[in-house]
Amino acid sequence: MTQVVELRISGRYVAAHPWVVQAMTGFLSAYFMEHPGFRVQRHVEEPESGTHVWVCDVPPNMKVPALLRRLQADIPPCRHSRIDTAPQAQPQYLIDCPESLDGV
View 1 (cartoon, one colour):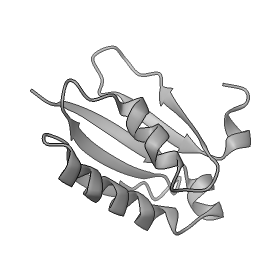
View 2 (cartoon, rainbow, N blue to C red):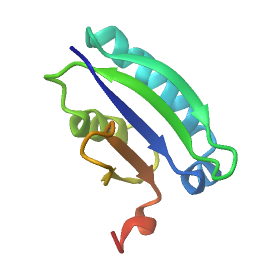
View 3 (cartoon, helix red, strand yellow):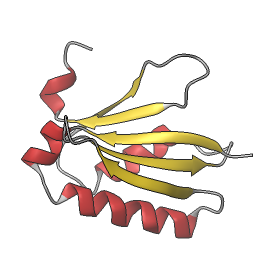
View 4 (spheres, one colour):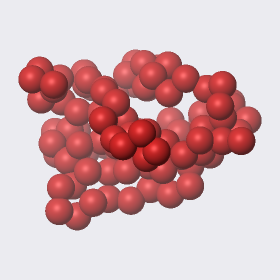
């Protein structure tokens, strides 16, 4: 059984590096080819914040932080963190500018 996970890129990071949206889409497409069970359900942009969200099906044995570390090699400097959500909510991970997460 797969788990639903949200991968988010902040509007601030997208504004600084607009090409990252295409890079993320391409990276996730390639990841789908390498890892059976991984799948992108949809990609949306939140108009009010400019945040891009990829909703993904992730196999139970897959480590999302490892996916994010691998992605970091292909995009400008960033920080990623897991967003605190309710225990029953789907996990959310945020990619943002390095300096924006210092207080978290």
